[in-house]
Amino acid sequence: MKFLYHVALHSRKKVLTANLCCGNPNMKIDGRAYRTIWLSDDGRRVQVIDQTCLPFELVVVDLVRVEDAAHAIRAMTVRGAPLIGATAAYGVALAMAQDPSDAHLASASELLRKTRPTAVNLAWALEEMKRHLAAVPPARRRDEAFQHAALICDNDVAQCRAIGAHGHAIIKNLWAKQAEKKPLNILTHCNAGWLACVDWGTALAPIYTAHDAGIPLHVWVDETRPRNQGASLTAFELSAHGVPHTVIADNTGGHLMQHDMVQMAIVGSDRTTASGDVCNKVGTYLKALAAHDNGVPFYVALPSSTIDWSLDSGKDIPIEERDARELTHMSGKTAGGKIETIQVVPDRSPALNVAFDVTPARFVTGLITERGVCAADRTSLAKLYPEYSQAAAE
Ligand code: MRU
Image: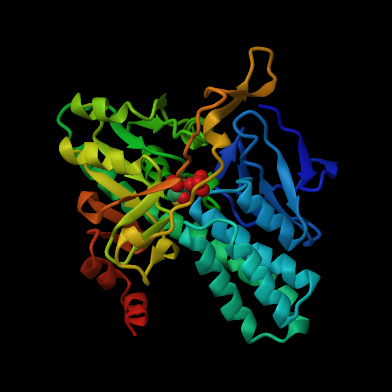
C-alpha cells in the first residue's frame, strides 16, 4: 500500500510525521498500531486517516479549524457513527482554540450538527461537549475541550472493547454448538470496524476478539454500494488483521443464507431507538429479512452513544439522502495503478442515493452493547440503561 503523506485539508502537504496515534491503539496496518483520530505532537492539530483514499493509499489529514472537522464529516473523510461523534468532539475543541466565547461554542456546534443527519452519535457528542464546557470559563475552555474530546475517544475505545467481549461469547457459543467443525461464517454489511470508530469497531470487535481467541471464522463482506465501505474498508481491515474473508455483491447474502453458508449476521448501527428499531447503512434491512426467513441469528452491535432515547419508532429517524453522483460513478484502481473515477449509469438516467434504512426490532436477534447483550425491545434496553431511559421519560 502507498503510505505517504500527511495532507492538510487546505492542501498543505507534509511528510508523514512519526507520531501517528495517541493512547494505546490496538488495530494495525502493516504491523503498525493506529487509532482513527489523534492529536498531533504539538497538540494543535487533530489528525485523521482519510478514508476516501483507502484501501489503496494511507493518507493522514490535519484538521486545524472547526471548519476542517465539519468538512471531514460531510465529505466522509471520516465516517461511521462513533468516529463522526469523536470528530465532532474534537471539532468543538478546535473551535474553542479559535474563539472560546459562548457565541462561538453555539455556532460551531450548529455547524457540526448540520454535517450529517442520521448518526445520532454526532448530536450526542456535541451535547456532551456543550454540557461539559458550559460550566468552564472561556479562558480555560480550549484545554478542557481537548481533554474532554480525548475522554470521549477513550470511552469509545473501552465501549468497543466491551462489545467485543460480549459478542465473542455469542460467537463462542455458536461455535461450540456447531456439529461440523468448519469455520463459522459471519456476514456483515457496510463498515462497522475500527475505521468507523476510534479503535476495535462495533460489529467487527466481536469478530476480532473471537479470531484472536482462536475460533476459526470466515467473514462474508457485503460490498455496500454505493460507497463500497464493505469492499474498501471492511475488507481492508480484516485483511490487515489476518481474518479470513470474502467480498460479496450486496445481493448475495440471501442466497448464501438459503444454502446454510451463513451462521450469523452482525452489523453496526447509526441510530437505534429506545424500542430497538435499528437504523444502519442502506441494505441492512434486506439482510435482516433474509436472516429471519432462514433462521440465521441477526445481531446489531452498538455503544450506548448510538441509542436515541427520544425516539420510539424507527420511522422517525431522519434518513440521509446523498449526492446521486456517489451512485452514478465509481472509483477504483486501474491496471496501471492509477486511481480513476468512471460513470456507470447512462447520461440521462436519474439516480436516488438513500444512505440508510431501518430494520424493525422484530428482526433483530439481539443488541450487543458495552453493558451486555439484550433483546431489541424497550424493556430490555431500559433494564440495561435505567439512567438514560428514566431521563428520557421525564
Ligand atoms: O455512511 P457511513 O459510512 O458513515 O455509514 C456507516 C454505517 O452505516 C456503519 O455500519 C455504522 O456507522 C455502524 S457503526 C460502527
